[in-house]
Image (tube, rainbow, N blue to C red; front, side):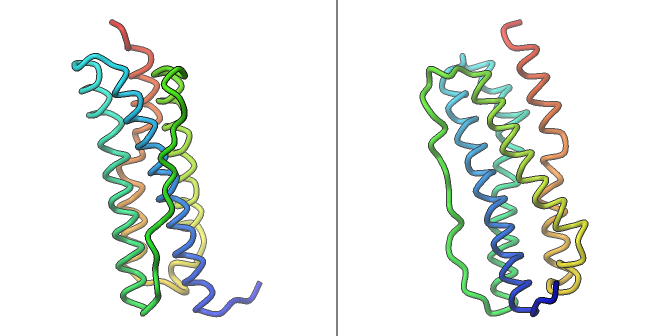
Length: 153
């Protein structure tokens, strides 16, 4: 499929915004889970799951904004979905939803990395930005599983 550089850049902006929105949802889920936990367990959740998601979310927003600025593109704040649902779902459901949403964000970014689009229409800073976003997400699925498995011990 043929595309212009402008179309490709817009697609990159939208894909990173989509990933950022999923990370925002993951952070909202983890925040809800935190509220249902005792302080010690909540601190463990924050350290192992929330911080990596929050770090990736911040990097996604920054990479997108910087890319847009470098190429003179207008960019709106990424959409957020902070409605994680009712607390009655429980901690496990929130953590599982967060891990799933973060995994979706990581998949979107992996597909961008695997394509030639960031090379053809992007720039080296964007490629590094995508790597930087994905970096803290790498251990999240295992961290979420470990947290849920060890919870209550």
